[in-house]
Image 1 (cartoon, rainbow over the protein chains, first blue to last red):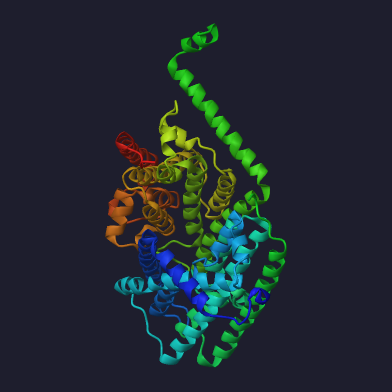
Image 2 (cartoon, rainbow over the protein chains, first blue to last red; image 1 turned 90 degrees about the horizontal axis):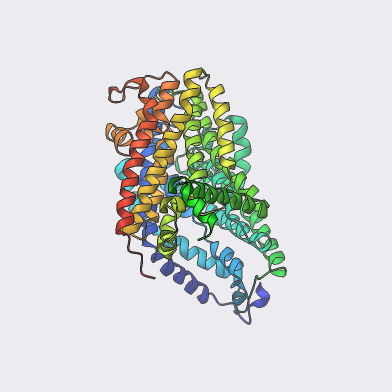
Length: 271
Length: 284
């Protein structure tokens, strides 16, 4: 939508959009308690489940109990941020027609959604601090080497961008369907399973693993997590992170195409 | 008063009320089905979500128990049956009593007052509000339960056939009771979304695995405080002949599910009546 931006591109408005989103999210304090409460509950259940499984069975190679507990706890922490649909305002605006007023503003609308969504996610990222403190009371979380942690952060950021694209695509389908909630929940549940958020992909049968690693779901959760627990060795970082970049480019291209096609046929109900 | 209305009174107030309630309930399902037909694509997507929701949970169990064959002596076959018992009770609850979960919303929006002045029992009026409910999840749950029972090699004898409907009804009542309690809390505290969400999570997490993996305190909680363990763990342990060392309860304790459900629901309904009498509205 660069054509809509008059004159020189200015970054400052988007920072403001992000700040506004943070302030808006902060008003829903109840959700904060819910998120942290349900997070603690899930950490507890995971600890009991994995402990019971390791007590009676042989541990899989390279994945001792403390690694899998670390994996599960970090996966849940990531979920606090990655499970947020930061583009839901696009759906809402398409649904009630207020998207029209955004088209009239001298801004890039997709970039506005990115700034707004990132602000929302940054607020949720604040939840990581109390959640992590709570998690540490329940399980021990391993700390990786500095190099692995740096690779994890990079991979996590790429995972966030991939997640943004997935959410953007889903919300864009509202241009055509006006209703997206069921489709969105389907994708969320598939991501939880196929992205390795619930169960590490290394525990899936070998034939399935190769397929799952190649899917975009793995680029969101599994890749950063496996880097964190050392299942992806430093020698394989370039390949693993490279695949995330490929998915980001592919999904980014789909976002652009869908947005362009959607804007051309935007339907506003009523008036 | 015409002759017709007089003859209606003669039938007796109880049966007239029952007949009217039945007619309202019939309309409830008629509107539900018409809604599903009207928004066909959306309905199909929601049905697909039901498949994905339960499918991904079962798939996760399969992956875990493929890598680790035993969880406290339960293998995947047992866990598939455990899930099936919960799924059936849960689907039955969601199909019949979906409206109870919406009470906090009605209270918040001031819509609840409209239900109070209807010439019907208020709880019944809540249950009979049409929504986008279709028994797709229930059909899926029935099919899955049949398959899981066969797969887990549960002996299907007269006792099983006789007991399962009661056990399922018990599970449904347990879920209804807890939702009714949360709905009643909304009369005092308007925003209960947080509690509702936590309760939902508690239920789905704590019904998935044999409760032997939890600490004693949690097991006591799941047995005696919020008896989720009677939704599926105790009945499944009975049908699968699993020994459970939990509080020295006899194996047949699983068959108490309907009684536990009834008792829990009675407590919840009492609380609901108290809340209803205290209800003042949110002041719209």
